[in-house]
Amino acid sequence: MSERVEVAIRKLLPGFSLDVAWTGGDGVTVLFGPSGSGKTLTLHCLAGLVRPDEGHIIVDGRNLFDSEAEIHLPPQKRRVGYVFQGYALFPHLTVLENVAFGLRNLPPIESQHRVTAVVSRLSLDGLERRYPYELSGGQKQRVALARALAMDPAFLLLDEPLSALDLPLRRALRDELRTILSDLSVPAILVTHDFTEAYHLGDRVIVYEEGRVSQAASRSE
Picture 1 (cartoon, rainbow, N blue to C red):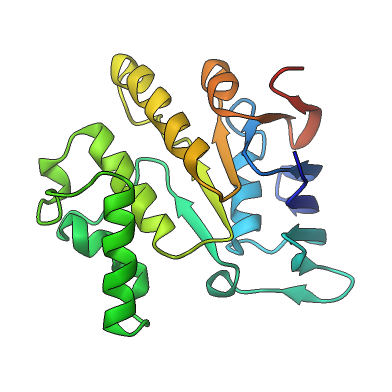
Picture 2: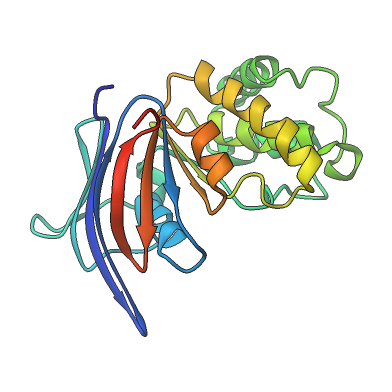
């Protein structure tokens, strides 16, 4: 598995310090650990929402952050697709409008082409005019992924993508999500505090404890 994501960052916050270093490859890298261990903070640093105090973040050879070189690309220049916890779909927008939301600065023809392609790719055909309250849990998950993929991201970030679901639905959608992520050519970094999810979804698992990496290995290890 080739290394496509390289992270080595430090961030000091009141009462908490993050100091982690790890690499991720072509598949899904899972950040696993209890709540408050720094997993989501790491995602925010990767996305450019939080600036680390020092270190570097490299994706596919692009330096997104480097404290020594004074590089800190803004979120819109990082080509990151972010799937938020609970999906964060806009309730007043249709499926089509949710997927197209981040493409408003593109020419209409290009935006339409991207949306059509990703809707078809994630089997959302026929749901374009529905609103989030009319969708099942699995459909909401696919809409959130479609919105992230429509941005043509260099990498995907998924923050506890199954945590808002009840247990039976979570099990079913875990397998569906694994299939979708396996079919993508985009490296993904996924946060979870559930070991079963970490094992089933991750190609590589990074174990977080109190802002540090305690273990890092492939799923087979």
